[in-house]
Image (cartoon, rainbow, N blue to C red):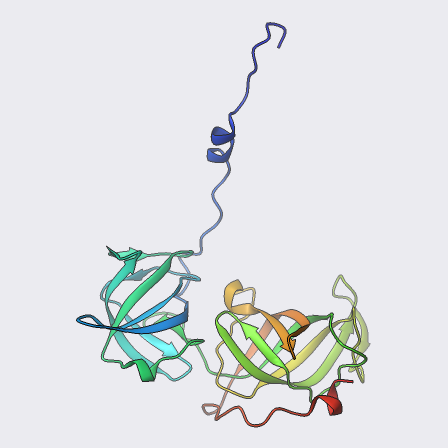
Length: 244
């Protein structure tokens, strides 16, 4: 001002004044499993980042895919015991009654008393193609990286090609090329759990890669449950047939 006095916030005050991001604490518990350990004197411990909901000591969880249930007997953050944890927390929690061999990276822990998770039979997704050499056609089976899971999936159908705003440009195109926006139906070739992006963003976004190249990115729009648990990944489809 005219008196030479600077008025306003310091950097720390400005940071403290920022609004807190929304945390989905009222949503169903979802914790993608990152790692599993066998701790001497403790038991089986699973680690991961809480995507939504609040996990409390004593809760009963189901881990999908696989539909295995266990009691959470303790929760830790940086080796400090916690009574409960919420979205954004990177945690380790002991699951009683399960061995290390029954769990694996890519599983998702959910509370048995809340909205259940399903083993995915297929899902509809909106993708942006960015790493195709020439054309991407139905039948192509790259690897989908979603939360902590990496699963081979088959792009079964190209439902429609859209513009950047989502407006339909072409129904059931024969192929996609770099820069195209499209809605596709995807069939996992191994057990997988995802949810629509509108329901749980961390479980609804993915990256598609093949031969160390990012082929596409996208979000899940809807999910269809599998009639029975998926079995195995099978052999990968030859690249030259569907990805030219």
